[in-house]
Image (cartoon, rainbow, N blue to C red; front, side, top):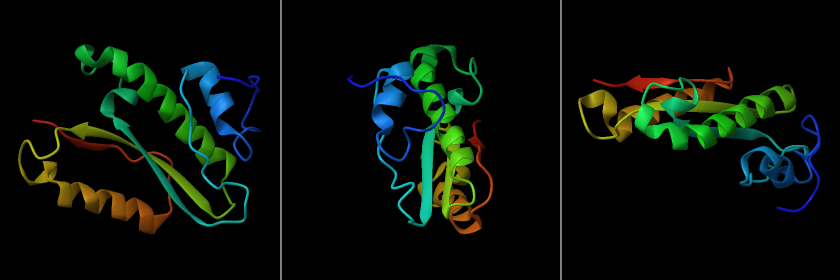
Length: 129
């Protein structure tokens, strides 16, 4: 990945991928932040991003998920008060593999609540048996 690594979130508005790639080896998507736009960006990862070690077999996935969580929470702080709400959902469930709380429509209600409230940076969803 080209570019130089920069401290802080100065890369968010112009080129998020190089800054994100310095620590993760992947890229981020430009979120329209800094362009007088309004909206909500919700990042989703597995629950291991917020609670490392809860599923040891997923340790290799938790590394990248933890980095994305950090990016989402940092972006939330960086754009506070600019009309863009950034949130992170660590999703701890097997979608469709259990009771009503694991069903897509129920989980969608959680996301709708985040979208309509425009409050908070992190909104865990836990439905494990």
